[in-house]
Image 1: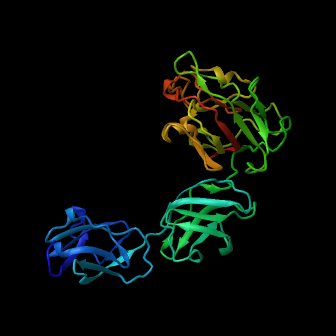
Image 2: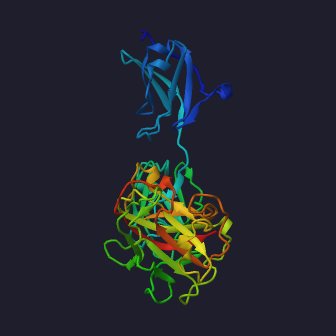
Length: 386
């Protein structure tokens, strides 16, 4: 540290490729380089009324590296304040630009009226919630239905069930543009398990493995759902899991009235299987398998280890070894990834889509061994969207 006051000559980006661009402002989170003299006299750097993180290892007599803070200032002066050890302050005109909001994903795409819709993203920023606007299609969410916001999370009450569409968020600093995903997207709808087990859903629990339809009001999302529950433990054969026989369901066209064959109209190679899931108890072994086959092939898909095309979903592999959810979440599985046999070999996409089998089991891949567990997995709203 040195005494005296700093002198600021100019500010530019840290990136050498942009060294010729002098700045009078930058976006929150940008990395900037301050050029001047006696910068070792600086002990604190403030952007508006937000203090920046200052690393003295990146300060020399003539250069000071700093990141523009990501917090929204409560007082906007459009200045940087350079503070010395004696609390003397040098001001420099500089605008902290705030980016437009960005939406990364919806936690759950199907939410009943009046329940919380959660958006994850960035720059959901305003001095109060009334300055954030949310649109579902052309419908604007009323201010009274805005629940809460923070920089990376926005919550609002779901509108009436007839309202669906892409979501857009607007703030004073710009708009997010419309999401690719559609709130309450019912294209390619297969089943929500609303009819009873013998009347139109095509739902058949695996023989001897009775996953069941429920509508517990404390757990329900959109009416009835399927509950998978049981114990998973290692088998004597490496890469297999036993005790899984409770976790198989079949959804068949032509077996029950009301189901089309194929189950969805869009092209499989450019479509996505979506569903809502609520994992109540730790899941830490075996993947969830999705297999399409011809109508009327019954449960033979389940054992077609060499030739049956399937997709795998094992979220516990990337969540610390076990997986639960905080309520219902939307899961998306590209059908272009449903092309592997039981050993993980690419055998191409399925050739027929008149039947969907879902199971939690390991058919011989050691990568999915995991640890013994007794998961409880709820599933609802199965669809394939283009």
